[in-house]
Image (tube, rainbow, N blue to C red; front, side, top):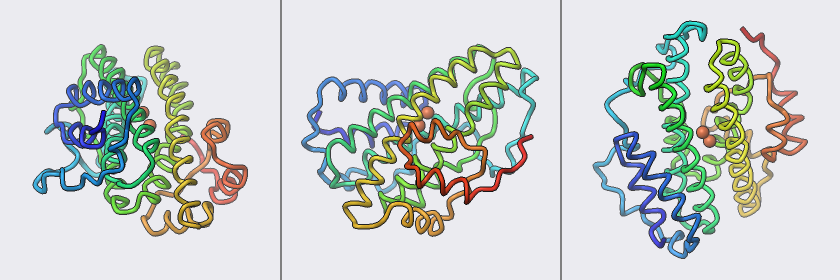
Length: 276
Ligand SMILES: [Fe+2]
Ligand SMILES: [Fe+2]
């Protein structure tokens, strides 16, 4: 497996969701069973077709502004399908984000690429499970509109791997740790135990993804001689990261490797806001 990063770029460019998910899972499985990533440090930026628009994605879902995505009740069949579609879209973007981390940033230790490829494989599983469940409800990926907030942050941090680690896994994916348990409870209350189960599996994996982000964020800060907590504040301001809002899933955040200082800083920085 010498061409791990080139392969990651290939699946990032893939347009068809099922092919992207299957190809990404197969690549992650192959790499996990035959770990030789000697070539991972090779700069492959020339491998990207200058005309390619990243990421590869299907014509649908139609992308709209976040404010234009309607919020529907989870207690109606259509509303539940819309909610699950939104999460399915997050997972589709998450495949792209992990593949992008894997191909875009040259010169890092092989373990960096292996970590992100494993994450990509897990995101592809999440996408697949959610899409299958959506199909059971009579809907499919692409049936509703979606927004592109996650990929926007990938573009803002495309030239700074430290910012990418700080603001994608440690900020956006970490918000998923906070959001998932209440969502799980809501779906269970609506009688969709399968969806609640899938979210349970996703939550467990996402703790690992945030941990990967924490590990490499700290590694990069140590390499560059910057203090992680202070530097996070600089990066969050520079790239207009969304403000973190309570309530936080502190257990999951601790399990994902946030330090006591970082957990304490959350409590000071983010006044609780009423949950609907
Ligand atoms: Fe995921
Ligand atoms: Fe993730």
